[in-house]
Length: 267
View 1 (cartoon, rainbow, N blue to C red):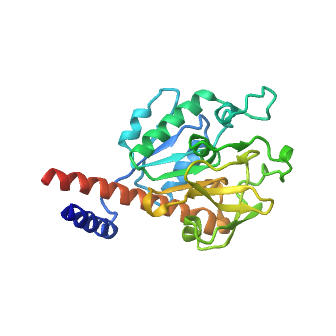
View 2 (cartoon, rainbow, N blue to C red; view 1 turned 90 degrees about the vertical axis):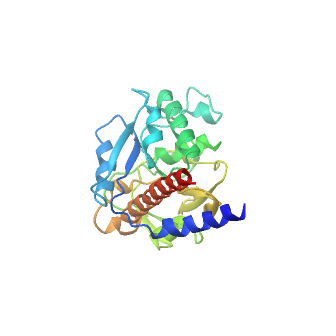
View 3 (cartoon, rainbow, N blue to C red; view 1 turned 90 degrees about the horizontal axis):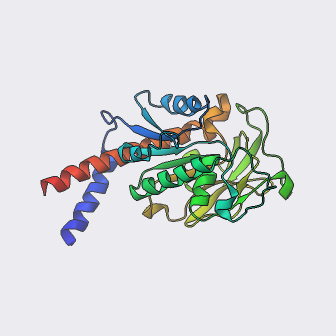
């Protein structure tokens, strides 16, 4: 047992020192079924042109591809079916609901968590992850008394967020206040199991979340805005650093997985 503990400590130090060169990454990205899927891939490729992508979709039902990826990007899209968090009102204000996509992505998330994959969730991606973990959503922000968060100008900052002082998001951005774009009419209401809020808008909407116990869990960052669409000065804190950190975490995951497999094969 003592030998195993020492070996684990050694490996953790070793992984942190590994160079990224030569480690080609494959990212699983959930299918938006729209041309805007390219926005996400191009955003990440601006930081690392060697990245490869596996589109995960309920249309071909290719969830098994999760076993071959180094990280998971949960993309934006239509609303999560409210039946999954206890609301079955047929007159609800949900838009573009696709229960087949919901169920497929729940399964993808389950497999990704089983593999301890780094996960980044954007807009709907944040919401579907929250619902998977037992959380709930506000069905329509204006109807619930909040500001309208579905605004034009997706490449520009339209409002500011206050970033939690002890959060992963603060560590990544280095800022207590960041400017973001906004294109959502729903938001997290009750946080799912193990999650904490890391960013709030001025009207109190949860705009980001992450694991409470970050030192004991794999990388997870959930954000309500669209960093892949921000450009210019708007991308300095709320876009580029997020892509860079996600890629860094995937490199670390791949290096650790590859080295651990080799280590135990040699034992």
